[in-house]
Amino acid sequence: MYMYRKLLVKTGLLLLAVFMLSTGCTGMQPAPKPAPQGEEPSISVFINETGEKKNLKLEDYIQGVVAAEMDTGWPVNALAAQAILVRTFAMKNIESGRVKKLHGTDVSTNEKESQAYDPSKINDNVREAVKQTRGQVVTYKGDYINAWFSACDGGISATADEGLAYKEESTPYIKGSVKDGCLAITKPENKAWEAKIPLDQVRNAVQKITGKDPGSITTVAVQKKGPSGRAEQIKVGEAVVGGPALRKALGSERVRSTLLSEISIDNGMMIFSGKGFGHGVGMCQWGAKLMAEKGKSAEEIIKFYFKDIKIEKKWS
Image (spheres, rainbow, N blue to C red):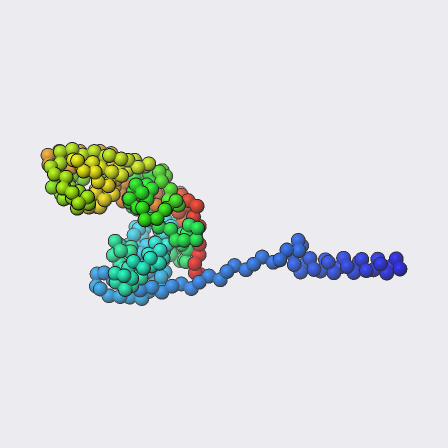
């Protein structure tokens, strides 16, 4: 009887060992397989220059956007960061249906409606950057982010509120007041610039924005600064106008940013002095270039400017 019991115990232990080996030594279930990725979308593109409508694979479209939005001679990792952001921007824009209402297409080649697009500038650097990041987008709590970027943030990034006066939805993933050192390598005109605008143009711009004629303009001052030091509100005569709105109305190529060092009136002109080029929200392209030159990856570059985000691969 004793030998019989001993044999039963040995048999039981053997069966338990076989079971544990078949399910993993801890007895846990095997790890689930990754969920299958979706297929690359095909999209419709409105060519603003000709009025033509084209169907393109999304990654082909992304190549044309990256080539138009960033210097194609820059490091591949900077271009790769740009690729992830423009892909995200495109997907969020398509999701909104904004361009569909305008042209019946998913996107357009007008950068005010979508993003800049120039396939003639595509080179091997761009192809490699897009290939490396194929299908990758940035999300916050499962949704596409507003994947903003600008040419040069003047050495310090802006929040969406101060840089763009954006209030449509919350953007907690935007890092404001990030110092990236971009002024060390950017163009001279981004380090320090000056714009002289005739007062009658300023008056017209203020009236267009506020709906009120400010009258004869004899004084100007920054009324409110944002966390990064940008001019959120500017007092022009007796009128108060948003800094981003005034910059846009006067011409964002002339008034290169709202990171102003001085604003004054002299001899019938309003004189703006500042640094940087663009709204300064999200990724700074010159900052991305600097980080890429230091060996930072595309993901590291993006996470420098955005927080609490995920980089997800939507298709293989």
